[in-house]
Length: 538
Figure 1: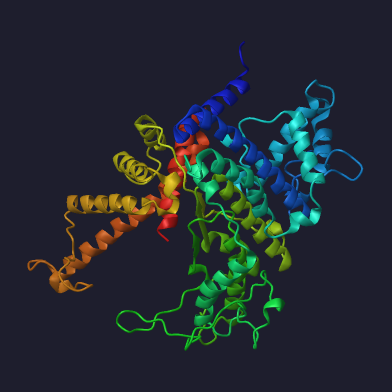
Figure 2: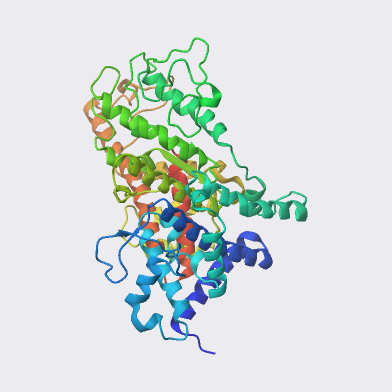
């Protein structure tokens, strides 16, 4: 039987996905189980995510009849009272004319096309979960199964459950419960793959533990710099029963004996350093799960940005705040302050959605529109990649062409270094040493180019931590030495630009190669490796 072009592409994508998972898991049976699991969880996370956005009044889509019109608040999953379809499905059916009314597969096509349209628009905010072109979405369930999921989502829980801050974390926890039992029963608790390792080591952290840890790290750091911050708890501190685990006030902070609330930050030579701005402080969770720590830390960071706006120019505060427009704070926190790594792609999906909802709700609470939250860069990454071979590596290098910094040879060396360091990433996660290999490759490139241009090392390591110009070779001229140092600095800046440009170029290449699903998977894995290197460098 000859398949249609669309069906052929679905088959190619599914085959590439299955090949990758078989290589990752070691056996066809476990690889196939992985494919089914990822397809199922991805669609479920998307539908639950849409429902949570609807209940929190955060879902805005253009009307189906006029995709270029301004967006409006709508529902995709939640049905209109007394009806079986949601408002978006109803409007999509009307806009589609006869296609969704009289054809044999009208109802199935309606759900598939309407959901794909909604996913594609929401992808502008959160690509890692809703991208309709991702391999985790290459196959749809039967219409009967999809309707059953809709029924469970709409009728199985009260709407208040979808408003809970840690609701999405509990969804992840619930579906891992049976998997954790299976792994323990089948393997006596010994994981056979990165997926089983993630399942067996997944634990839910209670909110009060999250608050205690973040208050005594991030909260302490900020209060040591700014004793008059709004994060400071009232005196005397509230009793334990009066404290809220969600309030962005560091009232779980435990004072240290003799601790100075404000301290001087000094250099090695004893000079006073400028305190970090709010946008320069980062919280990195190396095993982030659904980013429960990040959700609470978001509130502290938001207060820190507002502190800077309120106190700018005062003693002990910066002359200019990190962000002058409060409506830009939620997006700034996601782009500058919160970083997470996990070996489970499902956790990163939910973590990304949780942080986005947290940011949009913060915008609503502070009087702006959730549509103002425009996130340009995500700092969550899956530490999970499968090497598909040298041929795919060379094809990726060729695909980038001459549109990025650096020679093809350097790009290939960087990619190979990345992949050499990604061995066992599924098991080691954030412990993997990607950054060192990439940095070493770039440093070697700087040295090679410097020598080819006659730029030798200006400073030679002898004793002490810093070198003076007097340690330059005897026949070197001081002015020439400064020039050489400047030229080398330019090369180092070019290397840093190369690291950044390559990540963007690889992600773009992954989006372009729709005709080669395995090539796109390889490009996506390479991009994750480069992103892991960037986040680890923090």
